[in-house]
Image 1 (cartoon, helix red, strand yellow):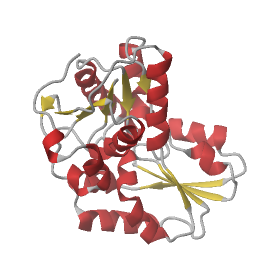
Image 2 (cartoon, one colour):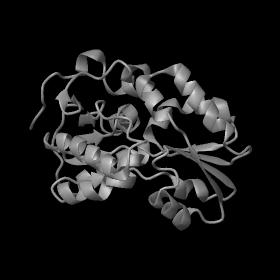
Image 3 (cartoon, helix red, strand yellow):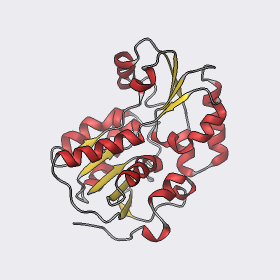
Image 4 (tube, helix red, strand yellow):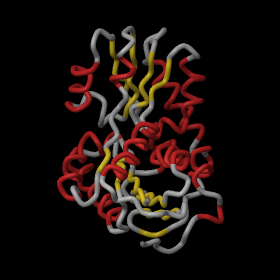
Amino acid sequence: MKIALMDSGIGLLAAAAALRELRPDADLVLSSDPDGMPWGPRTPEDVTAHALAVARAAAAEGPDALIVACNTASVHALEAIRAELEPEIPVVGTVPAIKPAAAGGGSVAIWATPATTGSPYQSGLIDEFGGAAEIVEVACPGLADAVDRADQPAVSRAVADAASRTPERVRALVLGCTHYELVADQIRAAVGAGPVFFGSAGAVAAQAVRRVAAGARERQGGGRLLVLRSGRVEPLPPEALRYPAGRAIAAEDSVVAARVRH
């Protein structure tokens, strides 16, 4: 089994680590866009153009499925990516976990990038799945970029800013950007132990495995890793190894420097 993941930067690490746990034998292709990130402040058209380029780089490696491990790309570019790659390559998008978070009612905060916050897509999910919950959207400018740089002072500032705009005593907090799952502990320290956190990494990893199995496309993998950064074959960036999820998917000697094809 070979599964590709794409994102603007290292936010895909959370879903990649979940895949490693589910299927240690799976070959992983991580395709990101360090030359063009952050995507959050870009226009929808610009996000789509960058996301398509990253998806094409991943698709060229012949994966059995592609995870769009980025909420912003899923909001603005998922349909364009699916139109180009499916049905040959199943495409799994990342949807903010609004439905399970809102199921218990009460107060729910959604932390997301400025591009996702207030978007018609997210507003539609809130209308469809929000139910009786009181939902507040919290834009987190600069947080994804700071996570990608592993810039802890900048992460702390962005988290503190978003926490200051999050209502007190929220029951649930949706991590509406995959980058945020990498710093969930810091977010919890800022908002307190009360809210239940809802991310997407585990769900999208499980869905990708199911899609591959359902399509009878499964091949034997070797647990190998291929990293594409703006289409270039490179090692995992050192910033990735600053996070437990990055260290979980690849020891230093398992990062391949050549393309893996079957």
